Length: 443
Image 1: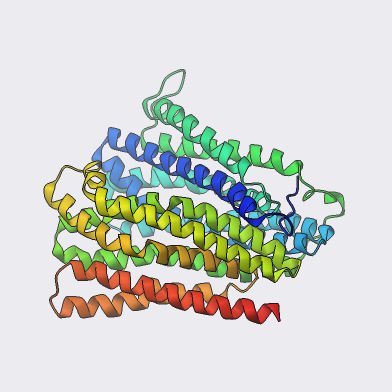
Image 2: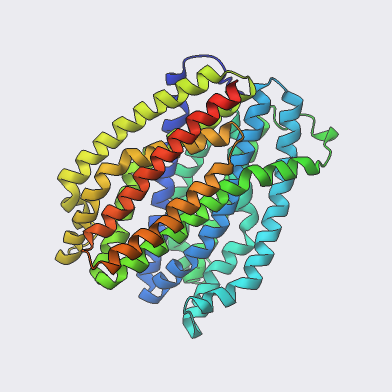
């Protein structure tokens, strides 16, 4: 199957690509909630071990996810040029690259994890339990990387349904496997926290098998007998994939920086920030589907030199993103307290969280502007800006502005206002740069 995104109604194509992707990511979120629930049922220490391991797990996911975006961009551009042999050549080399990437991630992870865990404060049984979880994940990294890359190839040909389907299936299967492996039964001894990671690796293996099968239904694996290793493709994947990888890593760093400046205001504020971010992510989840759609559509049309369709894709995506933002803003302004109370009954945490959500309500569209335009830049093979705006938005600006706010002794609300100003400025700069870059490549 190959969906030609260089012709046809763009509105229909955006919906066809974004809705399945959004649904899939929703169930992926539920997948993570399941793991958190079962860890909490074991013990507070098990839950802490899972949380501690997540930062390292996120690093691996960030690298694999960023590199996979490069796969969609490169293959999509080749398909847009109607150069199917090149698309196949890139796809086959990308899968080999995925194998090498997973091998490197596993080696580095296994060797560095004990030290990094200790650095984060894990010692004794706490360290052992954290390693029990993350080591299983690291040894199964090949499945995580291949799942990202195979889905990226399917996205390039316009298939976001397959990943949605397997994510829904995996979310339900994970509930069964978590219960079985954590508590034991049917010949399986209770595995504790390592049972959660074992269940995760098994579902990822099934995901790879399913996506691999769906990939055989496309033309991207045709001609595999004539496959030749191409170092230039590897280089292109690294150049194209490094900026979005760094962007995702910087997101984790940015959260740490904000937490650092919010911490002096009390544990309730930190807890409110954590819950508020989760609520915000749920509100913005449909925009993840927009990003997938924009990247796939822009990549093919960039290859076909159909720049007017790229501009139209941006316009329509921003319109849909605006509608999502308005609905989200109303939900946060009117129902912020109820949303916070779903996660906690602590009055101080709820009050602090409502304050955070009311500020964030007004910058939801700024996030949409950033996400959509960064996806466009990736699609036209101009990802370098992603690195610079990420460094500014996640590290430099927060450190400078939040340091000033703390120095002046302002209330915690100014921390949230400061972040909102940074996001708004970043959205404007990203929009301006992206428009100029699109005009440049279209000339």
